[in-house]
Image 1 (cartoon, rainbow, N blue to C red):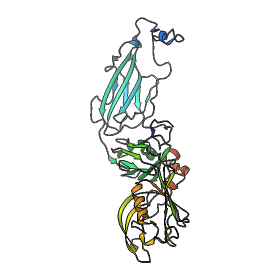
Image 2: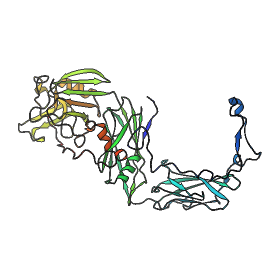
Image 3: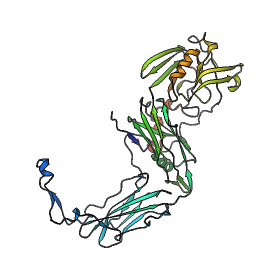
Image 4: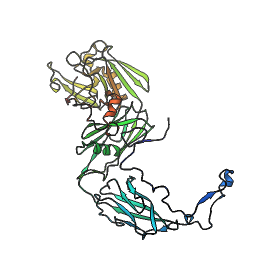
Length: 442
């Protein structure tokens, strides 16, 4: 596997897709450059040391070998140099003002490195942008020309576009730090984005770099939230960076991308805990090796633990759990120690000294995974946010992909990719999210 970081500009696939914001610029038609001199190399088949000194022009005064002339007078740009109030709603236009000059290349980029797509006319006299200018950003335009004698010219123009409209703010997650291999990346938008073109634009601007490289994809949970995950769990000890390049981009009339700080995440060891409700045992694996087997109890009849893959959300040394928090018919009010949270609705792995006699034997909890205080303390100390806990062989409902914590890994990869605006068009996620009960359950 290559150790080169990989960038996912379009939903995270290993091969970058074409980007309407940074498309390749067209070149002049074949034969449009009026070269009067041909550079030749008579020793292409000779040894390298000879060939390096054998290339020369067919004329003793090759204009292509001279420094480019200043094309400031030969080139007109409709954005004045060093201006700070260029209208981003208008296309950028570059024109060869002199009849003796033609345009051979126009290369326009903003401060984020995004290339402004454009089109050169058939006579190589005019160039105009074909994608919108970003608002509130600085551009550098490099123009290459050629005169009737075949000599090259250069002009560089810098300007700033004026800010416009509302800002689409993006809250990227998680916070910088080290997480388990199951931690998804998230992007929460300040405004709803529904149209396919708009979603594709947003998705392409959210760049994920992973070292080592992985195959991954964004998925639209709804019109204001996206999640990114690999096809399988992140590699152990990986480095992941999430950046937004939305700043200034026009999303739709009156809405432009805002700035967002990057997220830098690392993963630790690959920790996967499998809780089997039928054998009443939890096996904890670190990097593929079982390091501990723990007797457990899970949800009893009427309070069955959800089946499926869950991602650790938080670790709480102490939680007070009551029957009122989940509407249980039998009363309880318990101080709980070493609680590792799995769902928004209150599923935990925690110490349950009152049920030690049932652990490894039967399921007696109200949905949580109970174990002895010593085992709960060990588990608490050896896992981190983003680690995986998978419940199998329960009679409970399946863990929902969204709406009750991070159930992302329960969605098959093919279906996950359908939630990408880039890969499969516009899809709104996997249906209604599970309603979350925000109190603990034991």
